[in-house]
Image (cartoon, rainbow over all chains, first blue to last red; front, side, top):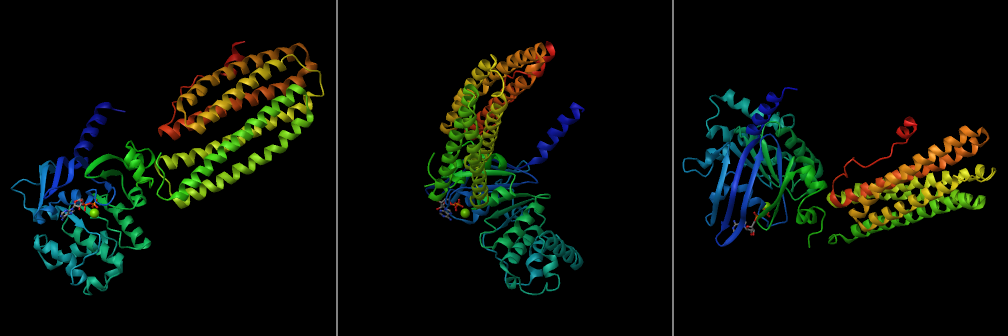
Amino acid sequence: MNKTITAEAQIASNIVSAKISARKVNVFYGDTHAIKDVSIEILDRSVTAFIGPSGCGKSTFLRCLNRMNDTIDICRVEGTIELDGHDIYDASVDPVQLRARVGMVFQKPNPFPKSIYDNIAYGPKIHGLAQSKADLDGIVESALRRAALWEEVKDRLAAPGTGLSGGQQQRLCIARAIATAPEVLLMDEPCSALDPIATAQVEELIDELRKSYSVVIVTHSMQQAARVSQKTAFFHLGLMLEYDDTSKIFTNPDHEKTQAYITGRFG
Amino acid sequence: MKEHIVSSFDEELQKITARISEMGGLAEEELSMALEAVRLRDGALARKVIESDDRLDMMDARLEHDAIQMLALRQPVASDLREIVAALKVSSTLERIGDLAKNIAKRTQVLNEGQPLRVTGSILRMGKLTQTLFAEVLDAYTSRNTSMAVSVWKRDVEVDEMYNSIFRELTTYMMEDPRVISLCSQLLFVAKNLERIGDHATFISEMTYYVVEGEQLGDDRPKGDPLAAFIED
Ligand SMILES: Nc1ncnc2c1ncn2[C@@H]1O[C@H](COP(=O)(O)OP(=O)(O)O)[C@@H](O)[C@H]1O
Ligand SMILES: [Mg+2]
């Protein structure tokens, strides 16, 4: 094998792979110090899971990644977070544009009280991603296909999104997030309101999405983290105690607290 | 380590650990009876080994069943996962050690038909060493003592060396006097079985290390190669 080429490929893949780079991030809600000195490199085209006990700061940190915390008055974020090497907290960055690049899916499916079609079309419209009705139709279809929902809803695009089942609503929300052509998808416990079948469908979808996006998922289910992610970060009391390959975390974690948490020994 | 929030999980893990200890004890006893049967030329004792081996087989099957249930129902991870996987492997290793002890016992039937041979003494010494290493590794596994496990792992080479020298001694006898071929080959089987038991003991060392450290013990263990010894002659 040619050594030079391998080395170059290595460097190239490193450059492509770090999608988000956070350094020394601290988050405060008034006096509450919710995130303490967290640094992490989140890879492109892979799924990163955030795990840890309730209140450890998973959602808070996730929301930093698309500046969702800006909407909370008492919340203060310190440190640097870069997307493709550019500081997302820079004054020149428009948070609305940022959130189109870094989409978010929430715990409870929250479709707009509009048609299935409009739920998807809304984002691309406001971001000016479609030049014509045909363009928009194309975007809607492709987003629904990517979210593995097209076959189930193609004959009732005008029906209200809220009339779908819970699992379908969640996939609709994922389709909505995908429609603005994001690069990163943040998901905060996206399956916690779903039954096992709908959960499996969303997990299958996440596995599919990682071919095109960087996916970050907060989950309370250890099995889910183990099933869908390649990297896992363990949070505890606002600190990120361990970050490693998911296979390493679930067979031989370095940190005693990670071990205690994933094996169900937390008191 | 701290207890699980779900205490029945701890109970199941403890049960598996206790069963491994019990199986280890049984295998030790089988080996010691088998060697006694060889030493005393005692056919009745040999038959007892053969009978008691059934129990070890049954215990292995039961442990495997329980471990698979735990894997399916508890979905263990990290040290719990390693513990259960290691128990599965150690259990089947103990079952095989039992088979080898049984095999040694079976040889006594033929051995008792002939004159006692002097080489039997070397084999019994090899048996003693194998017993010692086996007892130590069971201790190491039960107490999760990696340094003890590594020490056994390293000392298995002594068993290999004893095997090589017995091998040489026996082949010499057989060449000198073809009438002892049948007897000597039985003894050779006994020695070979002991050598295999030594290897299984090192495997239990490796499992001990895996449970504790989550990593494999390297594969640079000192080994005595029986074939090399033969070829060089
Ligand atoms: N909007 C908020 N206002 C004040 N404190 C908050 C707010 N959101 C979260 N917190 C606090 O920040 C800490 C981390 O919460 P969160 O990020 O929701 O944890 P997790 O998602 O891991 O359960 C908790 O102590 C929580 O009470
Ligand atoms: Mg949360």
